[in-house]
Amino acid sequence: MTKIKRLAPKKCPDCASENSLFIDDDKRLTCRLCGYKRGAEKTASTEETPAVPQEDRRTSYQVTYSTPYTPDPDRWAKIKYSTGMDYVNQGKWDEAFHAFEQACEYQRDFVDAHLWAARMTLDPDKKRYHYGSVIAQTGSNLEATRELMVLNGDLTREEADRAGDMSREADVQDAEHAVSTQLIEIVCSNCGGSLSVPHGSSEVTCQFCGHVEQIAQAGGRVGQSLTMAMITDRGKGTRWRVGKHLLHCDNCGAERVITGSKMTVQCPFCSSNHVIRTDALESFRQPDGIVPFALQRDAAQDALDNALNSFGERLKGIFVNNRADRIHLTDVFLPFWVFDVTARISRTRVETREGTLYTQSKRTVQRDEFGDGLNNMLYCGVESPSRQLTSKLRTYDLTTVEAYTPKLLANKTAELYSIDYQQASINVRSEVSESFRFKHGHDPHGDSQTLISSLIQNMSFRLLLLPVWVANIIEEDGDVRVGLIHGQTGQAFLGRATRPDDF
Image 1 (cartoon, rainbow, N blue to C red):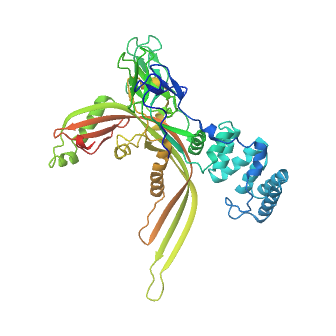
Image 2: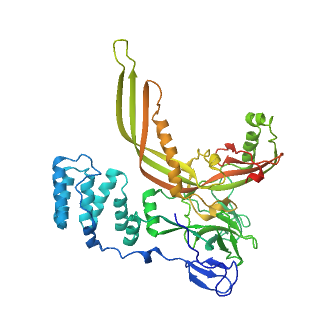
Image 3: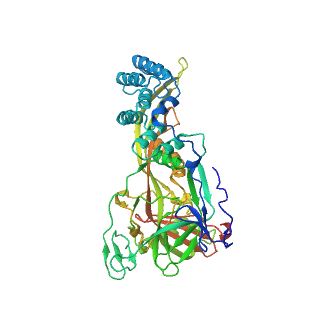
């Protein structure tokens, strides 16, 4: 991981003003006072060598007679595969392609032959067929996925080559200056008044004229392939981490710099409500869907009171003063990465029978493999509240997901994610493995053991905003703790009490 080099001095080179520089929508460093502009980003494309034309790419592949994706190919298919490799070595591309196709006809799951057939043809339809066959057989293949994205126009050739260069480290850089941010003002389309979304409703209502905005659509966007998303991001070159955003209110013209993680903001000068749509460096994704609040404030307060007065809390109160002095309850949409996973499961059964005085112990081993999947594995995309608390928010009914639109955040607070989908996908893998072990009866103890291991083949993900009531609790002894109340079910979870000095 690399850090960004200093983009410019802290003072404007023209007018010497401090704290006036920001990254504008054109990705150039700009002074708010005098209009000075300077190149703020060296695009990765200027550092790359020109891409090799498609017609010449066949010369760049290294000849190999091994079959890493097909350990034990059919004898006749392997002969045709070796013949194709001989033709590749001689630069006879058409003959090589026909030999690889014949190998595929002999053995349809011959992944290596499909891969080389796709490499040797310039016909887009034939490339799609053979690369598609590779993905169908392997579940996920970086080269096949990358080339299909080029064929479908999702990547340029230059981006694909950049993504395929594994010798380059991922370029993650910190923006040192505030970044220009595009906002969407949440107002009534009828009178321009403030909007609200009542709990338990998907209707956006104007607080002044009573106009109802019919905007909710069920379902939200479908999940995106994790592999394709990572290839796309790597192909772009630089991923930016933004610490400060420059907000410009289109209602009153005021500008200010914020460092918070809120997706919804209110102008302190005119009280207009806005939702952050994007910034100049495209450092974050828009949500794919949103789950409305089903729990009213009174019900959330009752659930919190029940948790605070539970037997465990009363028992704890014998030793420490954990009685609540003040409680601040806020309805918040937290960002969650939602993963769907397919995997190859390996199950090994081991049975041991004890022998007698005259016979030896017998150990029987039985192995089998099969495919399985898990849907809607949740991982919260914020660092605060802690993972220890947010991991308990699992039981969301995602059939109620609605397509995301900013007006659904009217009169609500929503957080921007601080943990991106790549880090979340790494962190969630241990939970996926544990879920598969539990599902298929993993039991490593006793004379009859069942051992479960899983190999993830494919993952897709969505970014959803899920409803949570967040309680900031100040206890009589001065300790502070956080409580979360599930915005659908009303389940309440209490965090660990800490001294303010511990933060």
